[in-house]
Image (tube, rainbow, N blue to C red; front, side):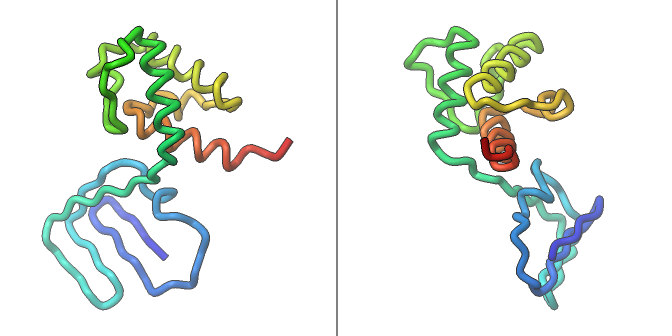
Length: 136
């Protein structure tokens, strides 16, 4: 079990759960203390946890971003590529989200769409929404 506060993160011995830590933290976070069972550190730590979407999902998102932003096919994109660094404005980002919704047959809430800034964040959200989608 993990608990999170503004300045600390604690892990306790498991009762095994299917909840992934990625569902607790979605963005890089800084902590003043961290503890694992009996071990505790008060050093300032930086912790980043990623859902690590499937490579094929990241690739599909990259392809859509290239198409929406009219980037050349040889433009190198990584999971960490930021839409703003690629020249996307807020309207471009809305169009990217709409294209992702159409491609993956999902619906992205406006609050979630506003938090997407990178290809990885988009891919992680897509996989999360696809998993939660009821079977047809």
